[in-house]
Length: 216
Image 1 (spheres, rainbow, N blue to C red):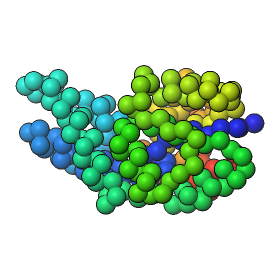
Image 2: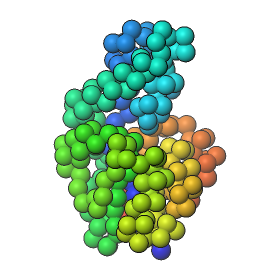
Image 3: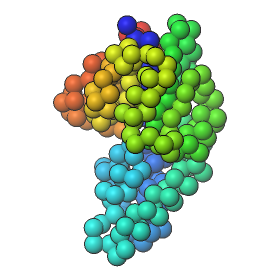
């Protein structure tokens, strides 16, 4: 029986991929790296450091410093762009309320930094999370954050579902020892190619947050 649900944020609760594409593209342009926006859209992943690392050419002079400064700049820009260029996923507030009404304990674990995450939650009035863990909260990775939630709430990992939108989220859940659920919608960062999701073999795939409420 599932007692706790841990949500990813971007692509699951918030439609933000195009915002991030624009932020990364502008960041790289400011760094003097010529790259077209379509290439950014093709190579972006739900992690600013990994995305920047993938897109900065290896022969860039002073590459390590360019990567570090670009990560910082992208995180600054995303806070400014949140409200205007992203939106909550359809039915998110209703789904969270329905899960809470059934006594489900709800958490958020995301690769976003705290300032961005809090801006998103505030602007879009997303609330009710028992705990929110961002990438700058001292955990090495999502698996460590999930383990800490389990330990401190005394919810066994097999009673936890991790809800993500990309294949790497399935691997996070599997390494953590919890159930994997993929919310496969138009806001998913790997949409419309589901091949990676299918290859990862999540425990459950839902086509909306309303369906998630029904299957939990």
